[in-house]
Image 1 (cartoon, rainbow, N blue to C red):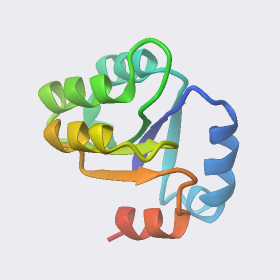
Image 2 (cartoon, one colour):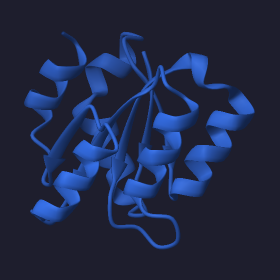
Image 3 (cartoon, rainbow, N blue to C red):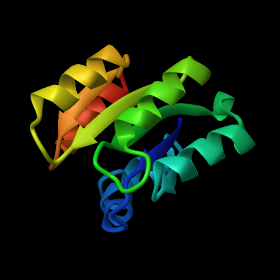
Length: 121
């Protein structure tokens, strides 16, 4: 399973690599990390969305935010699941994410055991 993690904070990459260490080593999961929503869109457009199963996106990022990214993905890459992540428990963002058809919504810090349970159903 190939996933894109979209977050403007670089330390998130190390965290995901640590938490999914066994799954990465066994080949169960492969990550691409994008530091912006624009970089994630470019990856989908250039590499094709067929190989990506899931996008985990932060909401609050400079430039295009995660909700704008979600809307574009759901309009143009309908087979890709999108989980939204945010450090802020904001009911407005949650409602917008639901309106834009997010497949899941979670607050940071991410509960990685719960996330794995959702991914490897």
